[in-house]
Length: 113
Image (tube, rainbow, N blue to C red):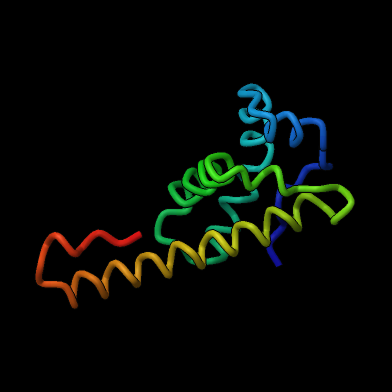
């Protein structure tokens, strides 16, 4: 197993990020970015850096970070499970978009949610 650069969880930063504090988000990304990039490499993603950027955007845009809870376990477990779900969702969307492109001949029908 590859050594991951996990930090001791600082729940105050996670809570501040969930509350929308930009400096907390920057610190969270700085702390966990190397570990998430390593996860992306383990999933053999084509562009681990890009996937990591998309993942952090997803955490914030969808307020997923607010679901992190110290009573439910470690933040690293939350991050790993959330990243896995994110990658599966991306793969499903990509497959659906490919199918839509193959199956639809009308360009107005190519929009896939």
